[in-house]
Length: 318
View: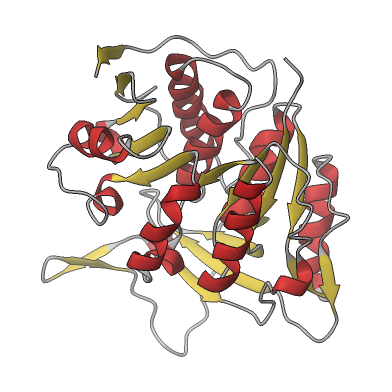
């Protein structure tokens, strides 16, 4: 089987991670807060500069699995935009279709990491918004499309419809923007080959009290379904079988940023290569576990040849 060509489309941004005791959570009336007194100067123990975004995070997973990977987005001609391009180029991701516009500002986030691994995010969304003119919709030239955080439901539909017409498999992990337009999002599922959501998101589309019940409902109309439930595990289905998985390993969590992207893209990377559901969900779990054990959304993403061990799975026929 030839290696598939992976196309990732979506928003990208730069992330700065700050670590320090100053971010230690304090509880007040049942709610945890980071208490930073106005007007004072605080020191942090560490600062890590990285890049993020659902689609570029996925692109790194694909590239590190030695899949030919292309990324499409629009960035500002600013330090954040240059940092993103340099990071993707270093991963051997094809960025020739990324548009750099000097009139725009790239998204930027500051992530304050508590010693517990939880985080508070200060997000500047930027002005770099993907438009139809930025995407060669008539010739997407890929085997798989991974799309998320496009920022326009109209554009998202046009890209998905075109990809479907061109025989391209579509992996869709809706971001918060898409989920705010629930009916429009649901209408797109007829184009989707692989749909990945967490339990709460799945319940927006179908009825069900368990991840297994939700996956069974979703897979009635979608070829592959992946539903996660945090530390409780996940399920995957291809309409014939349903695989239930727990935690890969119980590791100390340093940063949860990018864990969901690593899980979903890890699964997609293996399905795209014709691997089994069992292998795909094991790799996805290992990829996510590796990511949360390090700072940043991409640092821990597994490379081709990384050793992963088997995990306990429950396999059932539908």
